[in-house]
Image 1 (cartoon, rainbow, N blue to C red):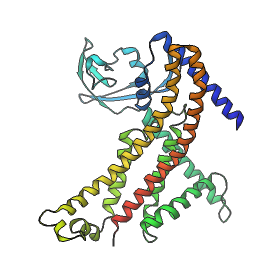
Image 2 (cartoon, helix red, strand yellow; image 1 turned 120 degrees about the vertical axis):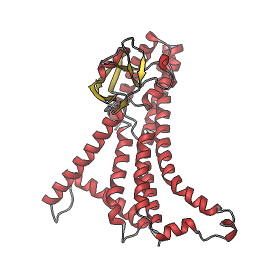
Image 3 (tube, rainbow, N blue to C red; image 1 turned 120 degrees about the horizontal axis):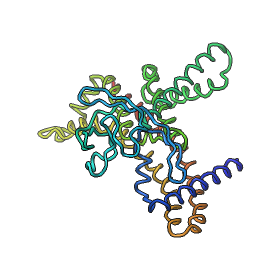
Image 4 (cartoon, rainbow, N blue to C red; image 1 turned 180 degrees about the horizontal axis):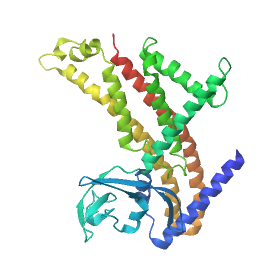
Length: 349
């Protein structure tokens, strides 16, 4: 354990030092841009940056403009040059367009914004996570069939632990033993997907440190899945509670105050799921990046202070990394637990 910690400390210090001198050679270090670049999505898988030169793997760009589909690799758009009538927008094209791929004319002027269906860093990360989950499940099923009647072993043990945990501690208590089985596929899939996305997002070489669950679009889709399943699970008793809740008459007539609040609550549930997951994961990434950025801030004034404070920053960064590993599990648990509660409430008798 001590050797692993020492290697992590020295590697991080070395990378920070390289980046520090790269930024000194080019321009003053911008903390805001660095953090936002990490939190945002990109069209390439960034590996590392050595003396200001980025090493990245290009990803497919898929655009639909004027009914025509254009497919090419993202490295053709690097350097600000136009390719096949497309380029990255800059501040001159408008603040809202900056960073997006736009269609341009022969004079390199903005024409329109195409529909972007590219395989970005986050999309590629989602593919890897989903592929990993499918591999683990199929591998476990194959092993379970071979070892039928025997104790689980290896990866089968890990998967059966999660299955037992989700069913016994989340699904049964909140949905009920009679109906929990039909929701296990979703609850288990949501838990594993969120947990692995959170965990892999902390790894520096996982598709550019893809911030998947720190992307509001991803958490919105996850919350919508829960919302749709909850709506299809409702009973007449649930809607009776919404329309005519068991409260004093003056809270329902002449102004339907409580029915209105109950109706709004239907939509606040998925909203809370979306924002909670997004905010917690984003906050964790920002804090860890802030510790690293402090090295550059001190190093801009003096290389000695940069080296000296790097030890403190890295120690706090490693501590936050360990905390975020715990948060990765907690946020997956909270999302799955609340989803089970909302589904169980929809099945009100």
